Image (cartoon, rainbow, N blue to C red; front, side):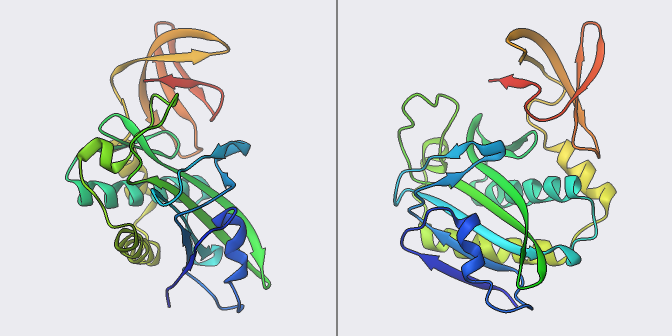
Length: 237
């Protein structure tokens, strides 16, 4: 059974989801707000969002119901959110490794997956911050929203309810690991294109060739292929 709870304001939906996981059998429970005050991004970064313009959403899924590796589940979650936004907007939507969502060359969503224990059950806590109506992003030049990239004014509540039901169905019916891996790489941002990367403060050209099953990205440089974990390299776009 899927449940979705709303908060007028909260610090972080990933932190406060535990308040609505009331029973040991709770699963596929979602929590959302349009005013998140202390949003979290990957590796301790903050996710900053204007009130009543964007969505902060978290869904809790029991780990026992996910029969793929953590890395592939991360890939699958990113491809699921990408698929939802592509269907909604009719635009090209890509995944910037490992799990940022790019709409028309601007980042419109970020995903943070954590593992937590609640009421004796182990959960994947899947948080997504999605820019929907925000128009200005100040100094964040690579950020955008559904509105800035498509001109569409989206109803926040309907968007959230539809996203929740979409992900509920996706997480109930996982494809094979091979399908997840192929779908992720098929939609990888700037794959097989010459791009500029920053490594230890130095910029150089390279070509993304693939993301692998261990969560690494493989990039071809003049001296050959090299693999990287997240935060070891930065794609400039």
